[in-house]
Image (tube, rainbow, N blue to C red):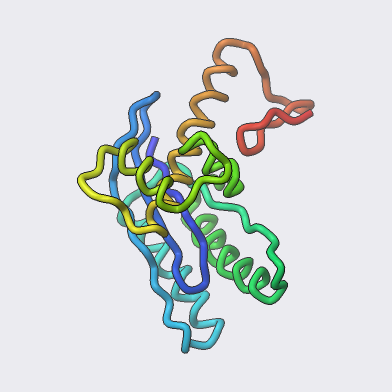
Length: 181
């Protein structure tokens, strides 16, 4: 399964693509979409949408994972981040991908074992898990960590479904690796 991870941001949007087969993870590509801050908001959002669409066309992922927006003390910043996330979500939807959402806490806990890990710890663990020669850039590392999180959560849930330990249907759903209903 090829997974595209997205770390949305209005100035810098990270993306990372990995292949996951069972517990085996393989790095495919990653990068950062740098958006000039002097552009009008609509143009900045268009740039994010266009670049993610290009990543989808080039890497041909099977599914996607994106970080959920957190609410911080500045409502204006939260709104702008939400708009950048919306542009990324639109690109994923237009690309025909299933979208799986994870909080920063879920991603950090999955990749490092601690929900309060620093960016440097995420970079180091992504480097180790994907056997990279060097540290990935912070935004790319966050996007790769998001993809890794989905790989781990989907393999756990898939294994539980195959074993019959859980079922999905009209009364049960799975969202972000949690069984609901």
